[in-house]
Amino acid sequence: MGDGKGRHSGTENRLTWETRLPQWLRRRPKDTEADDSRRESLLLAVAEAGMPLAPAAHPAAYRCSCERIGCPTPGRHPVSFAWQTQSTTDRAQILRWAQGDPEANFITATGMVHDVLDVPLEAGRAALERLLDEGVEIGPVAESTGTGDEGRALFFTATRGTPEDEDEWWPCELDCRPETMAEHPGLRWHCRGSYVLVPPARLPGENDVHWLRGPEHPLPDPLTLLEALTDACARYAGESRARDEEEYAHRAEHADHRIAWPLGRR
Image 1 (cartoon, rainbow, N blue to C red):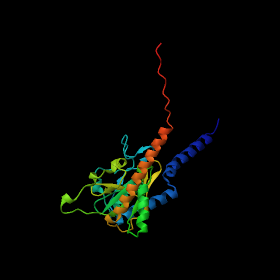
Image 2: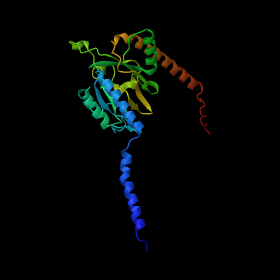
Image 3: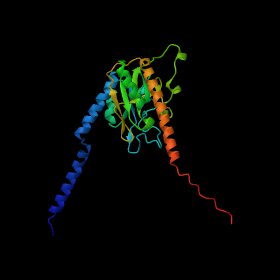
Image 4: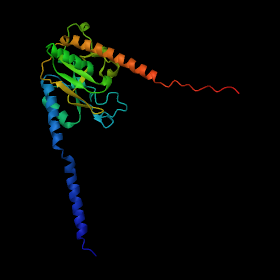
């Protein structure tokens, strides 16, 4: 018969392992901690520029963190329906949100301090190059990566403000809503009643939103950017249409037109 020492030793080792395991699980890699610190710094820089923030959903495996079945905009929408009143530049509140959910994306409500001119990514890159060559003052610019119309360039500008005569104002919904991006491949003007994701933000399929020009750049008058952006969008639409027609013709040329012979009567 044994003296029970081995049994006791095994139990002791198991207890030590179980005691340490939660600590190891809670311990985060140093690079992750550095990423969190950088994320918080980027978010605070947006708030310091006067742009109000509110928490948004994020990708969770192959779905959206909101757990809505068939969410049409996974990782791209606010968490709360009250995002307009919830949006804030308060440093302490933003840190609480960011630290409370290290994976959360953030949106900024437009039409209060700033607007955003939102164009297809290819068109935005062409317009940015033209504006820089012409020496036009450009504010913050972000890229939302993705394939096709999902890739967007975001030009942050000063807001048009709220005029005394409401008839002189249009809400963003008359142009488009953020949820209907795929239906509007051209330029969209996010103003009152709208929002955009701010960097850093993760999107499905290893895509993201990142700064090309950070929020430290002064917000320009949107009208100074409008001509270059609309011209670039027109070229983009024309080139996209030409590519679609070429692809359609190619498929038609190589399609199998063989038709089964009808059965004859006996």
